[in-house]
Length: 259
Image 1 (cartoon, rainbow, N blue to C red):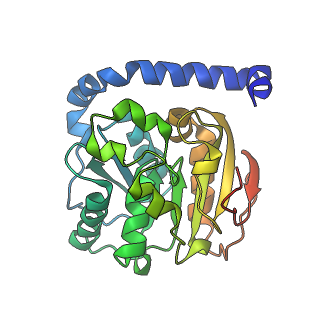
Image 2 (cartoon, rainbow, N blue to C red):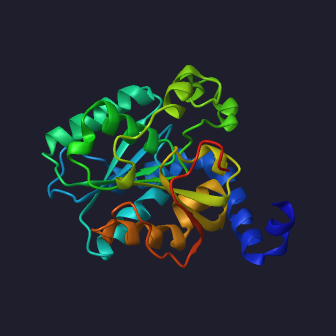
């Protein structure tokens, strides 16, 4: 793993960008202030979306709005639903996502769950009858088996739920999706926060994107954007992954021990 990372120039560039993203993370609140008019996530949207980007974290990131811009350009009606771990648990965010779908009368609406947003979405789908409204569910770097990086956020009770030995992650890791053929997990070749062994559920197809870095995977990688577009536009998925040139490998129905 290390030798391959050091041998490819694009990995080194991506890791440098990842370090920069992490160093600037404490100043995100300043960006949020500047971008406040653009970062609003209305509970009721003016135009009914066919794709909802679900973000669950301690703060908003302006980078996530590239998703709306890119998907809109590709002809999708896109909305972003943001839920803060500062004010609610992941279980509570799933209820908030259901209320979001109810308020906007959403049906036949696909979900893209970014990192922890994939856990919010999974609980909505499995426990709150979300599958009756969602034809396609894509996760990007979602910590289904937790992340030891949550130790750095130990002061937050809701963030501590992401630790691999937490009761919450124990329940999530044992969850068998009701419709695995509608679901695909995207993982980075190297992810310092959510390793491949943590980023998918048993029986679900996984795409390993040829990038290094958790934030780079879900914020800056055009390969990730393009893979999501291919999945969203594949109306006949039938549980079979399509050709994705940007991916290192497509894994059919991953098993619990598959890294």
